[in-house]
Length: 468
Ligand SMILES: [Ca+2]
Ligand SMILES: [Ca+2]
Image (cartoon, rainbow, N blue to C red; front, side, top):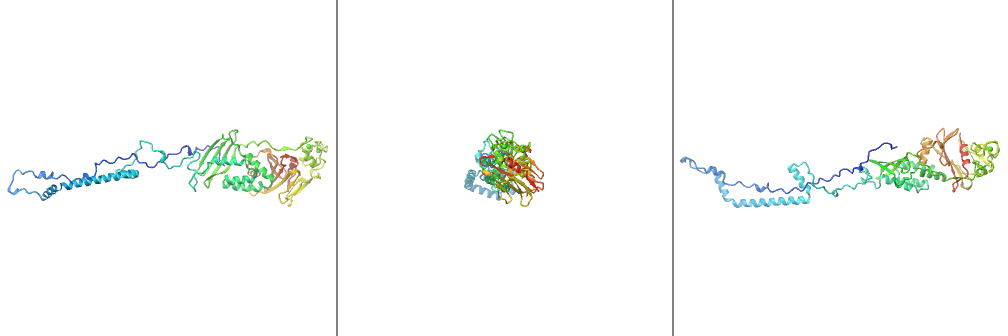
C-alpha cells in the first residue's frame, strides 16, 4: 500500500528538461580568404641567386676564367623560356581555387554539418561557439510534453506515451462507476480500467457478490458508497516513477484523502489500488421500516408472522416486550423459546454442521448449500456459504468483498460459536466460526419499495445461528 504521508518529490514534468538541439553549426564560417591556395606555390623568381655569382672577380687571372655553372645555365634557360608556362599555372591554380570555393559553398548550403566537422578536424576546433541568435525550437523533434506525464512514463513495449494520464483514467472510472447497476457491470468496468491484479481480485468476488439479487444489490451499493464524490475542485497530485503512478487526492468538501495507485500495463494506466483515509459518510438510508401500530419495534408484518398482538407491546404479559423476546429468541406469545412458536422452524444443515431459525411459512428454495427462504411480497432471506480458501480474517474478507476501507466497531457481533460483522444497513451479516474454514453470509432482501417488513425476524435468524 502506498504511503500517502510520504511527500514525494515533484515529478520531472515541472522541468521539461533541456531540449537537446542538434549540434547546430555556429554562424556560417566565412569562406576562407584565398590566402592559402595552391596557386601561391609559384615558382621562385628566376635570377636572384645567380646575381651573387655575377660579382666580377677583383683580379682576373687566366686560370680564373669565369665559366657559368651548368645548373645556372640551365636555370637561365628555363627562366627565360617559361614565362608563358607560369601564366598557365596561375590560371589553372585560380580555376582550381574557384572550384574548391564553389564546392565548399555548395556543401555548406547542402549540409552545413559537413563543413563544420571538416573544419573542426582541420583546425582542431573543440568548442561550438554559442550562436548569437536563439535557434528556433521548431527544429527539435522532441514530442510536445504533456504537463501531466513525464517522458519516463512510456510503455516499454511501444515506447509511446499513454493516451490518457493517470488522473484522466481514474476520473473516467469514477464517472462510469456511477452508472453501474449490477456487480457484473462493476466487473466489466474493472476489466476496462483495472490492473491485471485488480481484475483477478474482483473476479474472485463475483461468485459471492452475484449469488443472489440481494447480494448483488448490496455489493453494488457498498461499492458506490465507497467511491468518492469529486466536484472537480480537488487537489490532485501526481507522482510518476517508471511504470507506476500515485494520485494523491484531497476531497474539496471534507477531510478525506485518497491514494490511488496505477500501473502502466500494455501502454495504458490501470488502476491497481484505491485507498481512502476517511470513510465517506454513508448516504441517508433509503430503507424505511414497516408499519408498527403499537410502537413496540416489532413491525405489524412480524406480529402477523409470529401471531403476537399488533396492539400490545407485551403480547403475553410476562413483562418482556415482544421485540425483546424475539431478539433474545423467546416466544412473545408464551413462556417458552422462540423455536417453540409454531410459526418458527429450525433449519439444520445437511451435514448437520450448523442450524438456525426461520419462519416456517416461508418457502425454502435452493437448498443446495445456499438456502433461500421466500416470504410474502418478494421479501426473502438467504444464507451463502463461502470456503475460506485464502485463510482470511473476517475483517479482511468483508473489506475485500465489499470494497470497504474500514469496519466500524458498532457493526460487530458475536455469539458462542461465531463472530460477525453486520453491514451498515443491517441487511447483510458476515459470520465466521472458530475453525475459520468458512464464511456464513446472511442477506435480507426487502421488497422493491425498500420497506423493511421483517428486520427483527432477520436479526433473530442470525442470533439463532449455531455452528456445531
Ligand atoms: Ca409492533
Ligand atoms: Ca412478552
